[in-house]
Amino acid sequence: MLTILGRPQTVCSGLSRRNVLQAGGAGLLGVSLPRVLSAEQSQPAFTGGRAKSVIFLYLFGGPSQFETWDMKPDAPSGLRGPFNPIASRTPDLRICELMPRSAQLSDKYCVIRSMTHGENDHNAAHYIQTGHKWTRKAENGQDVNARPTDWPSMGAVVEYLSAHQADAHQRTFPDYVYLPNRLGHLQNPKYDRTGQYAGWLGTAYNGLATDIRPENVRDNLFLRDCTEKELDFRVKGLADASELSLNRLDRRRSLLTQFDDARRTNDSILKWSTYDSIRDQALNLVTSEEIRTALDIRAEPAALRDRYGRHLYGQSCLMGRRMIEAGARFVTVAWDSAAGTDGWDSHNSSDHLQKWLIPGFDQAYAALLEDLDERGLLDETLVVAMGEMGRTPAATSVWGRGHWSYCFPALLAGAGIRGGICYGRSDADAAWPAEHPVSPEDLAATIYTALGIDPHLMLSDRQGRPNAIVDGGRPLELFA
Image (cartoon, rainbow, N blue to C red; front, side, top):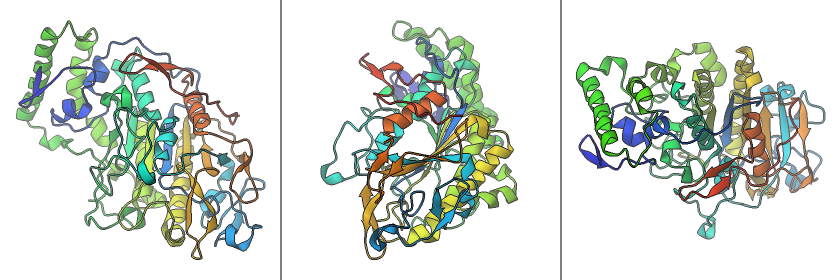
């Protein structure tokens, strides 16, 4: 047994980052001891891909295709939506009038108009983030917490594969980052939506997640500009440099001493062949100025922050760019449900779409693409934007729409994606794919391939059974 701060912990490959690094006073950092101590066989990955990193812009709730990227202005009045289309730089692509900035940048991204699957509720968050159908069913379509038996997210697979590379000990930044909160936590810190975690890979491969909190718990940070206090992306528990007293550092060294003791008594259980080479790295991580600096958005120029938008989503997209600059390979930026709104789940009306959601996304998305391009990062960063579903063709009198996962859009940009094109086509009612249907498996295979990961790669679960990271998906031919 290993005792950390007086609490016994079993030393095993499933030891979480929280147990190890928060015990050292450093919070939930990106490189856990299970990761850096791992001596499993290296997996071939990250070779020959077009992308060094992925930014996954997840619009939880399901943006309406009719009010965004698959408008049907010639459809009957009860279907086409309340907003007018505007021209873009892409032939035959008509974009919502609330997205003028994105319209002027459409030559930089591809619109997939034929995403489709049959999981018609919000638990499809699992399908979209993992590329695997959810293995459970929710009664009456209710949302359900994540479980350790769920499939690992794409970000967690990236984290796992990176941890098993020969040069893993040289990496100093987490590979999987989740912003601005764990999905579901803005409504309830104890609610963990499915699809965002490492599942059966083990908690060691969960992503680093920040923990944003509004000053007023009934307030929605996506719907207004935020204060600097609210935009604290620093991981809770990560001490400022001024707080790193000698006494605290001594306690952290004591933590490493405990691991030395545990190693001597557990050689028959664990493989420690890489331990000595990373012992000093573990201490460096719990006092990491690099991680602390990367998470401090106040270092960005005020004009650039204004360009992204001072609302939570704009600042989270800017933070996503900072994360990949610092070395992360897979960053998810979620527009989640929060107080006063259900995110993009627009059942009741188009009011929030018009006032906040569509204009806020337009501002942040355009700023992100421009910023990445100006920094020379767009050519090596795949940017994906989508929800878990779309909305029903039939609308209410105030333009609310229900769930519709059978045909919805996604945007792909960067990393050699051919911009200024549309892939797939919906039928006249934007209800079903008319050509080139795209499944979540296809999307996952495309993302993995862009990163130089074989989508047919097999990983072993905790029982040693091999599992394909994608089951049957095919990479889309969208790259120049």
